[in-house]
Length: 592
Image (cartoon, rainbow, N blue to C red; front, side, top):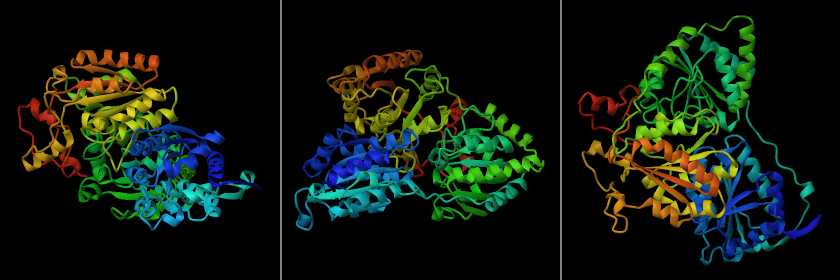
């Protein structure tokens, strides 16, 4: 055993647990931990410009590759309170990140000391564990439990709050005697898998809905194998996008009110059986439950027992890790294949493929100002199959979900439930940390981009190159579209005449100047025929200078993106209506 400060023990524990990527901001109450990181040298730290940004960087890092756990670091207050949004986002999407905060000394906790706040109680609702460690001897066990919780069952974030005197206290510790806790993941039984397949085989038009749990379990290959073995089409959720490559014959499209494909919704409405694996039946996916569930039999597989039946009661619920469930389903399906007891779903699969080949939305528009659909068409062409996209919320994310193509797991990184504005940029930086040397492309509307634009300086300082496509219509576009239902347009315009930049033509903020002032490169595009050239130039600039490169595309001010206020069969196809000279309905809501 060796006597050492608790913070020195913590750094050794982080390294042994494989969590060596930290993002944060030093401060008086967390400086002992920073001194340990400096002395030990096993943790790489990226200095954020805003502590919320650090939490989103940690998210992006975790989401980017299997096994990653990003760390965000700061004082308990106000840094910890800033990081709550990142904890909420991570919790909502089942993403393990570790938040470490430095607290006032134990004796000061009830005396309203400077920047002392009960961060553990604040963070408790959005974490799997939030603890202020009051005894130095508890530190190793607290971190051991934290990592066990983050990895077990439904993954999620943890916050550990460390009073300054606890950080500085000495304990006896031997890293060789420290062992990570075993990870608990429930597994479907053979009987459960057999019952699920029995129910499927009684159906004529079955579907597999693949959620983010499939990607969290690193089970995308198993999903594809099962779909091919059964010849059953797959519907990914937004969090599961990429689990089945977009160009796979059995990829049937996304379903939903917003981030959906016309052919995906049409196929779902024709189905009579659905097995959901690692998904949560989110409201923007299902729309009205009466229509979603009518005439269909449902099996729901989820790692969290209380998730089953939360939105509606399935005909069969199975508590299981998505990967373990796919293992069990594959084992039974292979046996059924050998004895020729799998129904022939060839006609159904071909019907789904036919809808996919014919029910496409228009993307090729030549007019100026540029229509957003053209931007996504050009992104597909410019960035190819190996790109990783990062996006958070708004019309840009919704349109991206409708028009972009994703070909592999963890190639679509998005904040699924929380959708905090400003998330995209810092999350992209975390993704770059997790995917060095790979092409990372962020997608933002102008308002999302402006929320945490200062984090671009982090990319410049630490040489984290990626391409950030900013589609600029100088509007809070999704809010403006949702206000149609109230027959108003209130506080949603970002436009003004910029006295310093007349070239922005009334669009307001000069993003090019802002980006350049933060040490990065920027391009502005106003001609649809120049988009492809700008993307090529951006890739070249990012590679040459190793900094983020922003491509701002100036859009027409108003474009209504296809979506529905209620049901899967009532998605308004605005462009189709416009081409016929008809007015689009106004009852469109955000549906959050």
